[in-house]
Length: 472
Ligand SMILES: Cc1cc2nc3c(=O)[nH]c(=O)nc-3n(C[C@H](O)[C@H](O)[C@H](O)COP(=O)(O)OP(=O)(O)OC[C@H]3O[C@@H](n4cnc5c(N)ncnc54)[C@H](O)[C@@H]3O)c2cc1C
Image (cartoon, rainbow, N blue to C red):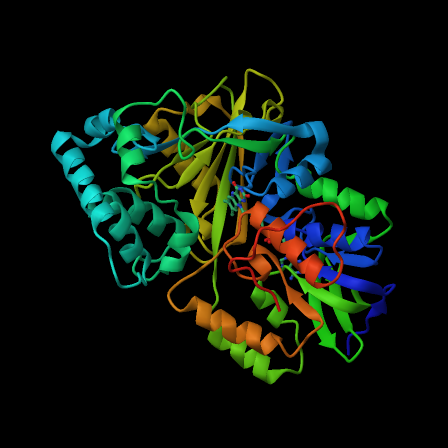
């Protein structure tokens, strides 16, 4: 039998030190309760961390901060002060060997697709925009074709979405599309397509906020505050076991050196992948069965992070590569987010997002092969010369996106229903609650949970009304 050393008990144990775990842990600390955070990685931040090498810094996919809730923006300003930049967004799509501004302009569309195809696309979009469908869309394919027409769907949405998710668009739920894709009015789209307005529309060049030293500054700052207030953030430590009793829970954790410890606590908040949480429950066969039947999968991502001896590669904050001929699906150039992401003005960098889950070829590929393939594709696009690549490395992220395939909502409800047996457990965050959330949505969910637990601070942040946010 494995023996566990006992750590000091806490009012709360928070599993995971990403945006969700650290935001809620700071609320707990500010409410004067004790908290221990358990994080598997060597670094805090989860999906929102910034990795650094030789003076270069990259997010794991370009992260912008945007919230429609002024209270959430003020919260972030309070955390980062003058270190929060305003950045102008510029996105382009690389299609058929050309870069096209997003939103698409008519002249560029004609050049890229030819007049006949551009007219066909515009006609199919206009037809879709005026038809009023009565029945609810179930699949992603139905949702998009009804709003944007079949030509735009086949040209952009289908290849890009299937590249990101690794599943066919008719297997992906319409709910995901509804959460993620804004539908511009037909009139606005026509205006934008024909001319570039003097004042950019909200969907085109949009400003966002960004921490000067990388997105990871948000979670680094939160972890620093939690630590300074005398609470514990354990890194390189994995959840090993979970046992609930009448008065609280006992959380078993394992360090990288194999050392096992337990923490007694009053409540557990989980932001870790559902499989990791459910696997920690020993002695609940019903839960193990529900978990096995649930098939709630996450999509992974492989980042190829490059340092490049060139002043600038593109004008874009993000560039999208829907076609399967290019190994990556999206890129960003970190110095366009903040000049502090590179060590000198005359060098730059790229983060290339290769969408792949564990076991797929891009995931299992040797790092050097993947870097060579990505560099070759960049040369083909005209973005890189072999000799200008200073260094490159690969980061694999297994739980980047909760997969919202058809029927996931019912299967998720069965899991959360089964976990309802444990009233001292809460699920939180994009990864922990299996919700497709950006960081601002995650932060709002933290405020909602803090309020539900009676932890709210009187700091004036009012969460917007809950949409599909949920926890147990
Ligand atoms: C490519 C990409 C681009 C994005 N762009 C944006 C953007 O532009 N703007 C935006 O607002 N949001 C963006 N997001 C979303 C944003 O990253 C997430 O909403 C946010 O970081 C989620 O935080 P979280 O704490 O819920 O999850 P996570 O960050 O996944 O945190 C979970 C934590 O649990 C830890 N963990 C896992 N297993 C265990 C275990 N067994 N024991 C202990 N710890 C464990 C993990 O290491 C991790 O730190 C993007 C996401 C991706 C993938």
